Amino acid sequence: MTGWVVIAGLGPGNEALVTPEALDALDQATDIVGYIPYVERVEPREGLTLHPSDNRVEIDRSRHALEMASEGKRVVVVSSGDPGVFAMAAAVLEAVEHGAPEWRDLDIRVLPGITAMLAASAACGAPLGHDFCAINLSDNLKPWDLIEKRLKLAVEADFAMAFYNPRSKSRPEGFVKALKLLQDTAGDSRPIIFARNVSRPDQTINIVPLDKATPDMADMRTVVLLGSSLTRIIERDGAPLVYTPRSVEK
Amino acid sequence: MTGWVVIAGLGPGNEALVTPEALDALDQATDIVGYIPYVERVEPREGLTLHPSDNRVEIDRSRHALEMASEGKRVVVVSSGDPGVFAMAAAVLEAVEHGAPEWRDLDIRVLPGITAMLAASAACGAPLGHDFCAINLSDNLKPWDLIEKRLKLAVEADFAMAFYNPRSKSRPEGFVKALKLLQDTAGDSRPIIFARNVSRPDQTINIVPLDKATPDMADMRTVVLLGSSLTRIIERDGAPLVYTPRSVEK
Image (tube, rainbow over all chains, first blue to last red; front, top):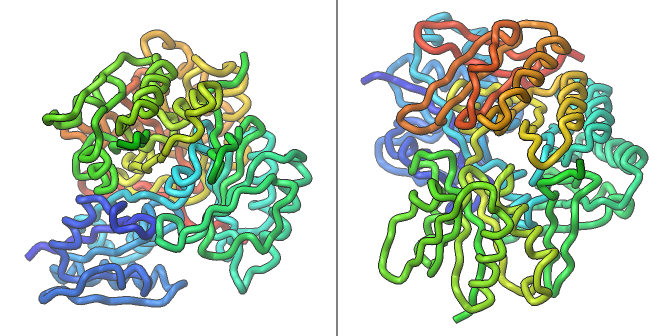
């Protein structure tokens, strides 16, 4: 048996957003590795071993996957969303680069998925409909100053923005600072969208003017989208639609 | 019959990347609207009318979809990739905002899809594995100066970058200027990735150092990814793996 490692994105939570390509990889796997709630999304079956692990052990988990593939196993590392967007693909490749030389010769593939910001954007219209950026607001692995620098430049570039990992119990202050910076520099009432549990039955979409947003509107289950200066709100009965126009006046 | 409009993303081309949610919408539709090559991806069947249209008629197409939904039809506007990323969702919502007031009361939904940059990123590893931005390089609908401003600020922010619509026959000079700006301002040999026909059988992935890239490497079927200053290349037998690390030294 020839082993392989596939890093597969399971999308934001709704099973109707999992690609057939990812499901096919799960069908062929002998071993599933990943963060506990993502491994729980995989149907158990004979011949399949599940290896759930805790958060914050991404490199250990990656090395485990690569070791098993070296032994001939067919390993799927499951990620939520898209594995290449603030998820497991970069961790596995970091483990490859710094790991056993023979790991480089393994069959390693990344399968894309629906990342949270695209599901959140779709859920309220098209706020990322023009140039945009995606920023991880956690400073666990980078200096806070870099986050602030990027936020300022993103406002200057007038990007729409998507923020991952806005706030956690262990980092309550970061989003307070980020939101204040955005309110001070953008200085207007462009819409900010708090999309919690996006695509799941308990999804909530909270759209507020930036100057009315408060830090408690976000938690670790929230992806936050911020419009550009041109983003529009279409009011109507029921939930409004938000979009960033394709055009900028010449 | 109650009409609706669904704007659905069919992903970058590979049918294994179409979500079950999008397929379900196609199954329920009475009418399909979209750019000719995307409508061609929909299986004809009894009771389904296909309305293919040419490029650059996004607003006419959107109005047509909304009119049909007003008449009780179930209309899917098909988009490649994700409809919210440089695709049809913003166009339909623009038509809603400026169109008949009763269009606001229609059931309008956007279904996310795998956008080209995520498929391209997966095909070579995880070059968008840390903070990144996505920029449409076409100046059909915005001033060229704004594109240059965003490129400069994105380099300063040290974002990884994804570029859509890099080059067309009618705009041969834009990518020449964009590439020169990136080479001059980034000033290093970080990897740039030219992903053509991504996810299709004739996919090509060309990874070169930024200072060796030439404008002819891109066309309208190419999505271009550029690493940040920290992006790594893992050399090995066969195609190298490219990834942007999750960490920045504190």
